[in-house]
Length: 68
Image (cartoon, rainbow, N blue to C red; front, top):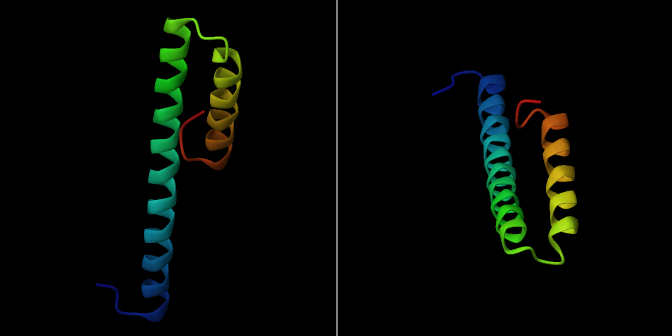
């Protein structure tokens, strides 16, 4: 457990970031799976889904959630 006030605050910040990053990673995994399924099924909306997935990946990489 942190002792100082600044260490306590840093722990709170760290937990918030961790949950936000986990949520983003889960959303990315879902988008990737949906895109792959759409491509395999040759859906008409596969192109838009892939573009949405690529945009989300670029955004996550820019924020440092995943590696570039």
